[in-house]
Length: 223
Ligand SMILES: C[S@@+](CC[C@H](N)C(=O)[O-])C[C@H]1O[C@@H](n2cnc3c(N)ncnc32)[C@H](O)[C@@H]1O
Image 1 (cartoon, protein in one colour):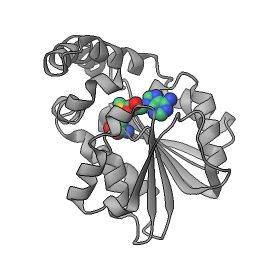
Image 2 (image 1 turned 180 degrees about the vertical axis):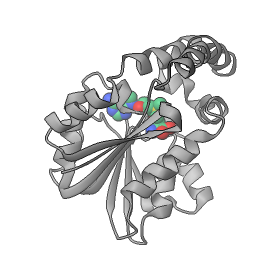
Image 3 (image 1 turned 90 degrees about the vertical axis):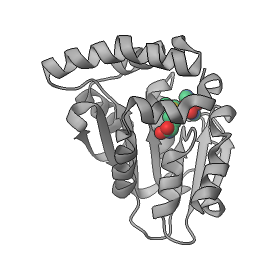
Image 4 (image 1 turned 120 degrees about the vertical axis):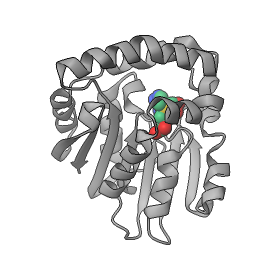
């Protein structure tokens, strides 16, 4: 599915979020990267908007590894990274977030933006993120969510269930993918429940931040 929508993914992303997704990514990167030399893993990196933001903020000598299960999604990433002047700090690999091809304790930081919602086994993914982190390493996850207020939720449902699949179908030619998106957000665990899942996977200092009235949540945890 992601291979299929890859060519129109960036355009639709920015269009449907009215560009707010850039702000969310920047906040997540600021939370994760402290400017020291780091080895950072971006799981489900897709077309790389977060990967590039990470590489920009990471100190000279840092490395950002992007992994994704869809080679098609990563296809434009290096071109975009070269344009941003950070391609020499980025390496990519096709891999499943639930079965990462890295040794225990490889990374100072692990992040995943709008990806874990799509994992078949989210708990397994979280355990993998923990495994590849160094002790004391930090994890930041961004995920779309259903907003808190009842009125806003009603508006959100109209937009997400009806308008967005229509726009998505029109631009990408794949209406099904843009029906899947709201369905996957609806079935994603509520923030408190997802925090429990993160804790149960072995992380400590687990917390979440609500962004843009609950349209997005940032989960922060440490190994
Ligand atoms: C909504 S996109 C997000 C892409 C990117 N992180 C971003 O912020 O735009 C979801 C991504 O998750 C990837 N994905 C889904 N399941 C995965 C898995 N099990 N392992 C790795 N990547 C996965 C998809 O291929 C897709 O690129």
